[in-house]
Length: 352
Image (cartoon, rainbow, N blue to C red; front, top):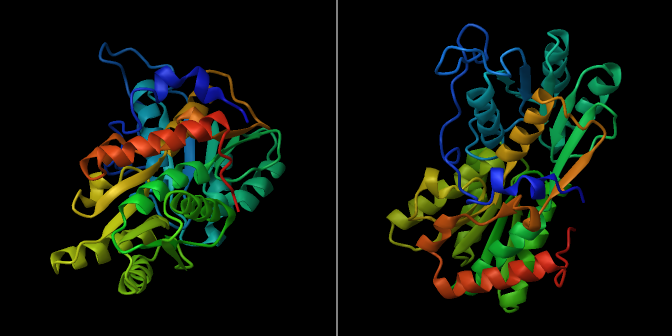
């Protein structure tokens, strides 16, 4: 495991898993060019990144998914604010959009092109191979190419901690998981969650429901309704924008007087959906991973051909500080105990 997060922990993550970028809406793109204009410093002098162009292609969840893609875009906007770099995104409506969007940045000689999400692996591989002088990076998949830097996460480790919370806090001994597409990265969420529940409450039933989409809130709502109707009182989702429907279903039930919870994913989703339904979230620092690799490009330190894996010990995944609003102190103490065991290697969380 590569651990560049360790050497920059004080700069990036040590303060908290919940930074100011979380919970905000994506910054609007410049109306003229679909991107953002280079910035100047307060003194009017140029910033170091103003000559750099950084492009990002979303998967089918869209940039306003309130989760994964949005977090990546927030990371690029932090780079823009700090360096003056021009940043731009293109949303993909289907996988047929991946290669054309990626190629558009190559054609315009962008300094770095991001592919956000596991689904973009094949497209990144194809375009990177055809354009060996261009730099690419991808989140949640490993692309073996000398001009691609890959960033993946140990989602199962953070999900394990949400399982500990759910297992200790369920009042019905029934909890659920709603996934988007049944792909390796989402399976890591599922398997880690189930392992955490079993560790603290082996009698709890975990119901799994895949919606088969990352961009269908209505399917997420239906999946959640099925699980809640079976008696579950807590659902963990890893479904991108589809997971917004899980929150919508929970809100409807809370308004009707039935207490149920949702465990969010990728961002601190209590900032978007409120403390009345958000028990906690499994925060995955996509924003900081995107920021770090992009800053490396601007600083001339791009690591093509590398795969960086971020887990609990790198502060790449974990629970936000806002967990203490709804999770009792004794449960959070247990979470810390299990986290320490995972970091020390005493517990090896399964991936599949």
